[in-house]
Amino acid sequence: MKGSTDTRYVYTISRIRVIEQKMLSPAMLERMIEANSPEEALKVLQDAGYGFAGEGHRVSDYERLLNEEQEKVYQLLMETVPDPREFDLLIIKNDYHNLKVYLKAELSDQEVNSSYLLKPSLIPGEQLADLFRERDFAELPARMTEAVEASFDAFAKTRDPQMVDLILDTALYSHMLELSAEVNSEFVTGLVNTMVDLTNLRILLRTKLINRPWEFMKSFLIAGGSFDSEFYRELHELEFDQIAKAYANTAYSQLLIESMNSLRLSRSLAGFEKLCDNYLVAMLKTTKYSIFGIEPLVAYYLAKEMEIKNVRIIMVGKINRLEQYAIRERLRETYV
Amino acid sequence: MELFTEQVIATILAVVGAAFAFIVPGIGSSKAVGAAGQAGAGVLTEDPTKFVPVMILEALPSTQAIYGFVISFLIVGNIIAGEGLTFGSGLVLFLAGLPVGIVGYVSALWQGRVAISGINLVAKQAGSMIQGVILSLMVEMFAILSLIVSIQIIGKA
Image 1 (tube, rainbow over the protein chains, first blue to last red):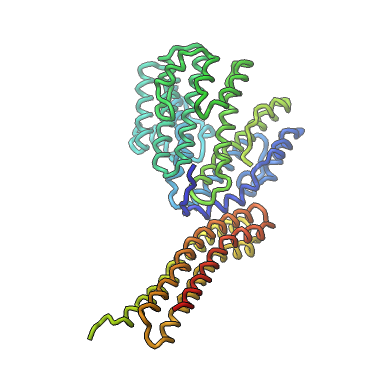
Image 2 (spheres, each protein chain N blue to C red; image 1 turned 45 degrees about the vertical axis):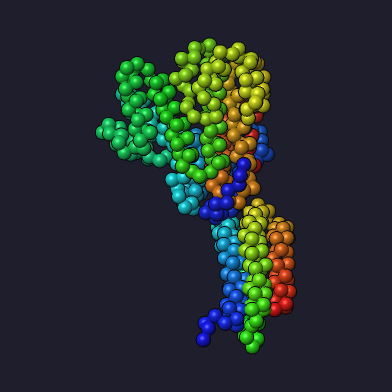
């Protein structure tokens, strides 16, 4: 991949190089796993400087601590970069999540519990409340407006809340592809493309696992990415065991070979999803020594997201008294 | 009276050479030190104790502009000292500005990159300043060689 020579980000990159040192190492995650209680595990996080300073946290609200940590990373980017809009593509998944929360509440006549809303997001949760009260979505980005209106229509026809998920998920990835094209970086477009490919691959594997027809799978597939829908249609006709072979000449061949092993054992996608995350982390690691360009910033944000995912796996495991090996099995590769 | 006598043309050539010898590496050094300074500020925001290594690394790409300054000074010195330049001397003085100008520019930009890498290295490991400086000085060597070549050419004027 061609290295970027865009010097606008050097300040933020060096700051990140210092902060990166405080990311949770595999040894620290191990300490959390071996902790005797969730409190002790949480202590590791507090020692690592998680969350905003000066607040004590209880195990019951560790989730808030994790949200704060992600917001902290986003704030750093927003304060220091020349064009904050380039980072929209990192957070719009939170917007689509929030839209789902509001849509589902609206369609089932319930109040929105604000603790379900995710931050950071392009459109603050409070503003969404106003939009839904007035049923006027023109202020949202065009893609979101379309998706929300399509969801209302589809629900009116089918009364199936899953349609909301389907429409918004597809819209999210199209929106991300659109935004990534505006960021002038091969790395970022490649990354979003990979996310789309892996999501489509997951859809394919799930469809095969539950033996559904092509029409079913087609409605979930995301347009864009490295392969067209014809490619997936042909794969759908193959036997489950032959799918890995069909990917042999692509970047995902190793990933699929490894996934097939875990799929054969358990028929669950958990192992595959972990391998997908590891694949993305490996991509993020390619920017570790970059000194220019937007790449290290995007990589750091997403690496932090992955770290928080790991922490969540451990905390949930600790609170539910899971065995240590079961927690370890679920952990993703770390960036540091 | 003819406006462009041999002397006038020779002097113009020499002055252009002197200007080139300073302007081009000056631009390179400004860009490089500027970018390295931003990178340095990033590190210092998080860790002010690293001021000394950051400052040293930031300053390294400024030498190319200094070499350019020396050469343009020497060229201008030749103009004033002579009793009117011949066309040949003017041309030689013009050419003398090229090595330090071109090589200095390129070496400043690349040394800037190595300096930023060095600053990021210091960001991660406080004790690695020397390694960063040495890596950066490798690029310095080409600027020094171009300085010598430019001086030798001036000697032929």
